[in-house]
Image (cartoon, rainbow, N blue to C red; front, side, top):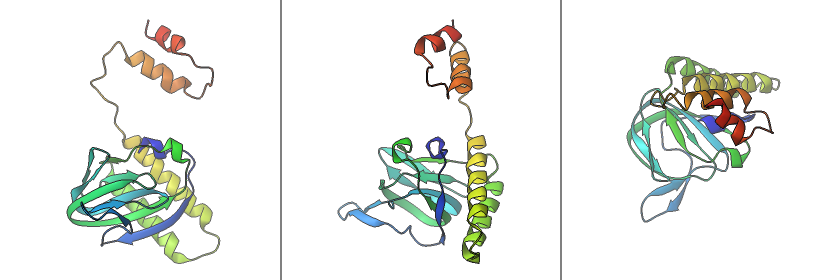
Length: 181
């Protein structure tokens, strides 16, 4: 989910009760391949998982799933009612599929439903509104990504320093090491 937070415009918004619109990557093991765009999925009501790249992404009510373009995955679920947003972004920044259960899934669901309404409204001048809602979704998802509490205390100053100075192109490992003494 973290990798999706970099200036992506939202293009295709859909609501699905059936399997995602994908194509079969391998007919021997029922593996599917995601679309040519990055995909953000809010699972309204689901039970199961997506297996991809040796990862198991759980699907449940309120879960948020990110699939990079052309991701091979194998769905295993009893049901999956979801709202899907496909968007373009820099592919090299979106390497890993991911799934989270947001802190406030009801807020993200409201935003996904708002996006769906804007998309079906067919007004010519609502692209900026859709983009604004999309960024709200990303901001809410980013707020939901919890910090790992098992990080050793000695490392925490380095993480704080990198977070504060990540945009500095001249940031060095020596500076980060110095921050942790």
